[in-house]
Length: 254
Image 1 (cartoon, rainbow, N blue to C red):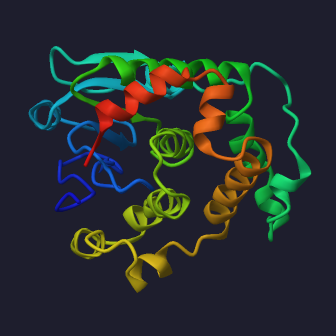
Image 2 (tube, rainbow, N blue to C red):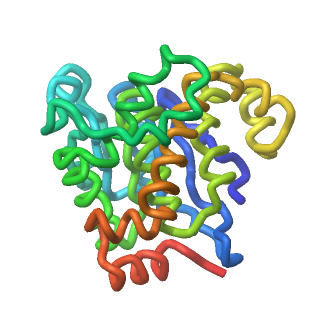
């Protein structure tokens, strides 16, 4: 596992290494290959160069064009930036299986959870994620994907990618909820706590009903409709069986 899951690059937002996570088969996600983040608009040129030195050669921006126009990414020269907006959705509504929302303890959370599920089914969102997966199979360097805060669109993308790689649900859930820790703790506390994602501090800071219930809804939907993440990725045509095998060979190590 990386020394710190949160990368110490000044002016970054929720910038995290996804390498080191274990799979159900005993492998691990390679480090310096897969990163998630909030917007890169506050980086200085020196910060952007630090990302380059870390190995980032490809950035996938999941934000809408209006967000990008207001706060464009700052990246090092030579970095390939791909704008893949998840919003706006193509369809005015998407069918949400009632079972996927059965875990909702607070009805105020239902609209946000429904948005998460629409990301998994809407044609426009799926086109963005399909291109993200294609880029992952093509790059041999680190790829960073992000939205504005690195929580919702980025969170769903991370669930998809980690799930496709065979990372267990408990680990995916922990990674998703670490955003709460990033935004809820000071720097010293954060860097100490991320060494142990099962620590009581992380558990306490992760007790945010909205985010927890959104993850529960996604898990319920994937389990009920597809069985698991790899099946979802294949059936939604984000990757072929051959491409999924190739992706695992590239991003996993013993």
